[in-house]
Structures are given as C-alpha cells and as structure tokens.
Image: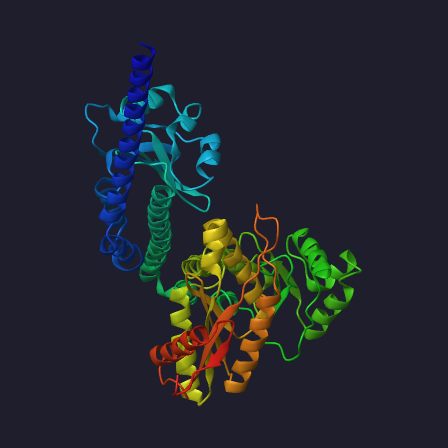
Length: 543
C-alpha cells in the first residue's frame, strides 16, 4: 500500500514538473517568436520614418503596429498629455467604454514615477497615483504594464499594454524601451517644429503689418524689416543703427547687458570720432541705477550719482554726448543709450519711446529662432552638435576652404570598448561614458573647431585651417587624453576607462568635396581598428 502511495506521489510530481517545463518552453518559444517577428526591415523603417521622412502620426502608427504584431499586445491604451490632462488618444482590443473614464489630471507625483525609465513596469505602481475609476479600467482590461513617452522635462503620453508573450525577459524590456525612446524623440521634434512654426507666423504677421504702414513711417518700416534677421550676434548693431536713424540721433553710445551673467557689458558706438572704454560689470550696474532713477538724465548729471562710474561718465562728456536714456535690449537685458542730436531732447525721447518695444521684439525674435535652431542641432546625450549640424558645417568649411585655397582636416573616431561596457554594466553605463566623452571633447578642441556626435559611439571633429601635421598632432593628443581619463558611472565601484581609434583626412588632398572627405576619414578609421585599435591614422592611397 505504501509503495502505491509513493509511486502515485512520484507520478504526480513528475507531471507537475513536466507541466512547468512545457509551460516555460511555450512562453520562451512565444518570446523567441516575438523577437523573430520583429523584423530588421520593420524596425529600420521605423527609425527611418522618425529621423528622415515621417510625421508624428506615421511614427506613432508604426510603434503601435509593432506592439501588436511583434510584441503580442492584444490590449493597448495610449494616453496623450495635453494642457495638464491625460486623455485617450489611441486604443486597441478594448470595447464598450466611456472616453471620460480615461481622462484625468496629470500630477507631479505621477511625473516623478514616469521619469524613472522607459522600461515597461507593472501597472500596480500606478494604483495610488491615478484616479480610482481609471485604475479600475486598467484592471478590467488586464493592462498589466505601462511605459512613458518622455523627453527631457516633457511628458508626451503613457502606453498601457497587455501582452500575450513572456514580458519579464530583458529582451522584451529592451525592445519596448527602444520603441518608447523613438516615439519620444518624434514627439520632441514635433514640439520644436511647432514652436518654430509659431515664430514664423509671428514673423509673417509683422511683415503683413509693414505693408500697411504709411509713407511717413518709412524709417520705422526699415527697422521692422529686420524681423527676418535671425543671427543674435549681429542683430543688435543692425537694430540700433535703425534706432539712430529713426529717432534723429547723430552720435550715440549704446551700453547693454550681455547674454550671460559671466560676460562683461557690451558696447556699441555709432557716429563717434573717438573710442569709448567698455566699463566693467560693477560700473555698468551703477550706471543703470543712475539712469533708471531719473526720467531723462543728461550724461553730465550722472557723475554726481556715482563716484565709481565717474571716469566713464567723463569719457562720455569728452565725446560731446549730452543725454542718456534707458533703452532695454530685451525684456530681460538692460541697456543705456547716450546720445546727442540736433533735434530737441523731448522729440528724440518721444521717438525712442515709440522704438523701444519694436527693437526689443526684433532682438528677442532673433534669439528665439537661434534657440530653436540650436536645440534641433544638439545631441541630447552629450550636448555636442549632432549629425545634422555636422554635415551643414562641413559643407560650409569645405566651401570656405575651396574659395580661399585653404585646408580643412576631418577626424572621425569611435570608442573601442563601448559594447563591452554595455554588455557588462548596462546601457546606462554606456550612456554615462558617452556623456563624459562630450565634456572631454569640448575642452580638447580649438575655438574654431567643430565637434559633433556622428552616431552611436562615433564622433567627428572638423578642423578649419589645419594641415596633415596639425591633424596628426591633435589625434595623438586626443588619443592620449581619452586613454588617461576615468569615467565615473553610478552604481559601479571602480572608474571605467576606454580607448579610441581615429581616422583623419585633409581637404583637398584626400577628398574634393564633403562626401569624399567623410569617406576618406572613415576608411582611415576602419584601417586603424583593423590593425589593433587604440590607433590614429591619416588617410593614404594604400588604405
């Protein structure tokens, strides 16, 4: 009898183990089938649509299709963030619902949770951060995972999914996080494009108003035409030149606040026969205080208000400038205009009052365009220029070198051990190395050089006015600098290290246009890697 019981128990145990083994095998096969369904062509098409030719609608559709076809997601909800609310934007596999159940206010606590990472996590973590009615819907549709669409400080939405395949594997998390990053980038690009469209509409509206101005406002028309000037480095001199003409000023000195707190004040003169010294920031603050404390002070009166600024005020007196006026450059950058005119001071002041707002709008418009353009040309991880900006500048530098019969050096290099770092410590560690690499490169280049992240772990440096010897010296110095560097990674006790392989090419010796130059530098880089890595080579015909 005891033998029969023991035998029955063994049979039951074997059946249980067999069932567990079969279930595990089925889940793993489903997982492998999902990975196989994620065709390289489909993923490549998604990347292309995002970076080259797609719209946000097209990218979002491809992401949803991949979730359904390759990730086995039979239930999907995407909540789009809009003006402080999360609203239903896309759904798949759910029926019989009220859209109001999927609409609620976004809060800071939820934002902190979503900011952590892009890897899918259990929806149970949302329990105390979303309305109870919405959480009941999550449970009703068995939505067991969520991941955010997040870039920098901007949340664009949240995906909630239920998958029929094994979701606790690293492969599933990595692939889903990749989709989240791709869609996040698409939304971020759209946000910047929308901002630029808004600025362009403002430009067009101002341009339309110009057509309606009367002939007597011709000088003002000439100034406002600068609305299409988008270089903040030159807009100030352009605008203040028009201010001088439109207000009837014959000679002027314009002292204004710099773009950053660390810079010294900027000085612009027009019509003067002798130079004026640029005061330091402390004197500038004293001058601003003296000017803003009076309605229309003359330059001679300012010396009594400030012993510190007396020398600079004396310089103004010696140039013959008789009046000073507060004239802010923008809403956040102060300025002082010292001037003289054949017109009565009251007339000039009236003209300046008319021009102040227009001048500030023009400068702020140029700065806004520059900021939008700068962000579209910047690599978010390293803070360096991105591939798009690299090709633009390479075209410019090659054209300039061709015009003046000069040389340009191009260096392309990559990290020798980044894949090993990713495999050993994870991709966040690799990102930390790349970010610190950006800091090393910024302090290693000359002022006139351009450094950019070419893609992945590849970087490039454009060196105007550099011959083969200069290029070779720089590559050896950079190679040594990086090999000596220690890269700190959160969660890793010891600092990491890496080496680089570099390839260089010179215009016009190794390439007569940007495309040929990139090819030559790339071939030199490949040869450096093939012959042992941690090397630098200049292109030659036998490579």
